[in-house]
Image 1 (cartoon, rainbow, N blue to C red):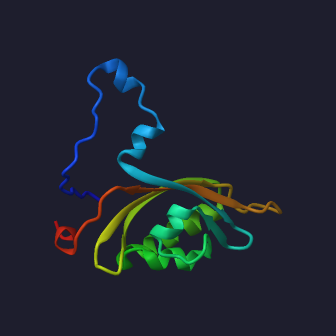
Image 2: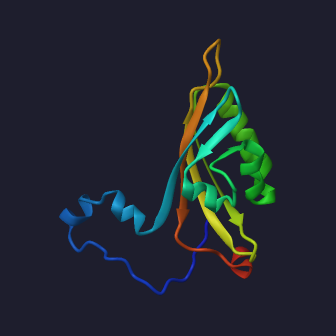
Length: 145
């Protein structure tokens, strides 16, 4: 996914190398919202934080995989499903990006990074990660660029 959106605001960009080396999570918060999530591979249930649930337009912070996939762009759903199925079968690290379309037709870019323990033997598997939501939306006309 490669997108650009116009902005009216300009962040406080550090002016020297020493300041740039001290970038922490509060600096990241200037550009995006983040939220951790966890999934139990035995039950297939996912637990999102408030931001993740809200961005995915879910009524609850707990849901199944299909409820998550429903929020993603139609053409990305099968790819993401295959990626998560593969990550569920063996210990893995993964990353994907897509857009979530809201009721007004705006697209919220989303990046997901995570890892899994897989489901080998008798151990119950866990999958977890972070959602990253850049602080802008893309209009339907910008989507095609």
